[in-house]
Length: 130
Image (cartoon, rainbow, N blue to C red; front, top):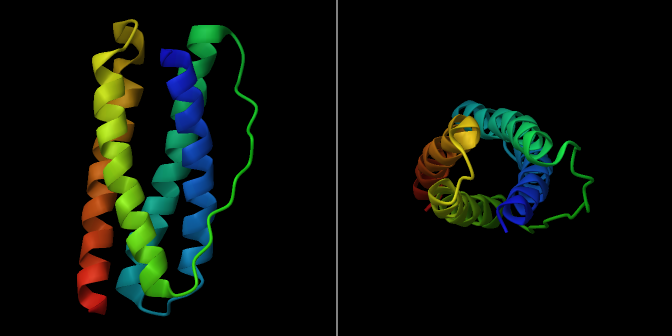
């Protein structure tokens, strides 16, 4: 079950990273760009960390089933990102409670805390768009 959740995390992280790259192209605001770039960089880091965890547990890297997320307006995209980051923070918190050993604690903890920070970034953007 833990490995399946890590695989799901890998796929969601890849999808979010691609989504943020597209979202980044929809704004000229330098503050929004900075926040979205940081979230995109975090997703790249999370992808690598989760692949590392998967490799430690199985001896192989996970093969992606690539998915795409779409949005029609920048505001809608920010709201989707915000909801996804909040959901991911809770997902990784729960995953942290089921770790099979301390050797995977740190990568999962980093992903969990970064998701919370990214949610705060998207809350700031979303509230500014109202």
